Image 1 (cartoon, rainbow, N blue to C red):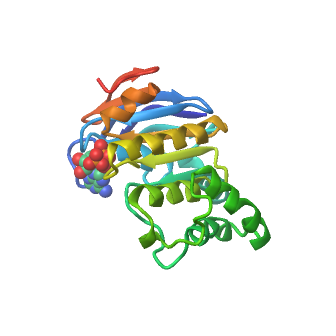
Image 2: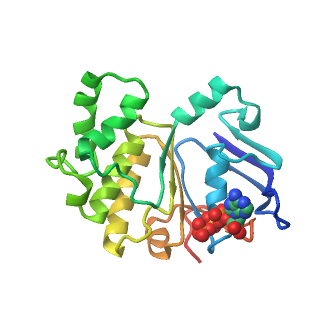
Length: 226
Ligand SMILES: Nc1ncnc2c1ncn2[C@@H]1O[C@H](COP(=O)(O)OP(=O)(O)OP(=O)(O)O)[C@@H](O)[C@H]1O
């Protein structure tokens, strides 16, 4: 589903390559952690997948389509197939949990009737059933992340990209969030997640891609943090 083929990324005005000659494949339905120290290039991999940045050399292919050659329409379809969750608390503060999740559907031009049917189901799935009408400030950090996950997943994307989603979450809550990601993964969605949290990587035992100074130094099935 995803192929990085000899991908290098050099940001304009910088001397050192942020990513150097990265090659790997991720199959549909996989769950992969991207680990590595701060500044190693984890977020840049996610940004390449979203085509927020383009490879300087090499190709990033998703579903046999070279992202750098995608037409505007193909790019729009590509972005619709991605659910994204960052490490920021980024719910709209003046909207309820329900409205925050329904917003994704609204942006995609879906009807309110559809939202009324699927949003409560999704909030139930992430463990927020009965709290649809709570505002973000009334929710704990972990519950806000649950709503963020619901928002990223409501469109049933082919892949869920998460950039350090457990940052600033206590260890128990981080594990809970991982159970949720596991549940999402079991529906067939490919999950790719950056993290520096050894505990969750060691508990989940999923594929581990380790980057160090922009190079892929380890690709291990059922890996540990190391
Ligand atoms: N737009 C940019 N212009 C120049 N350099 C950049 C840009 N974006 C990222 N970098 C550099 O690329 C390197 C890798 O950054 P990246 O955010 O991918 O690392 P990371 O592993 O995700 O780090 P963190 O754990 O801190 O998020 C860093 O040295 C960063 O300063």
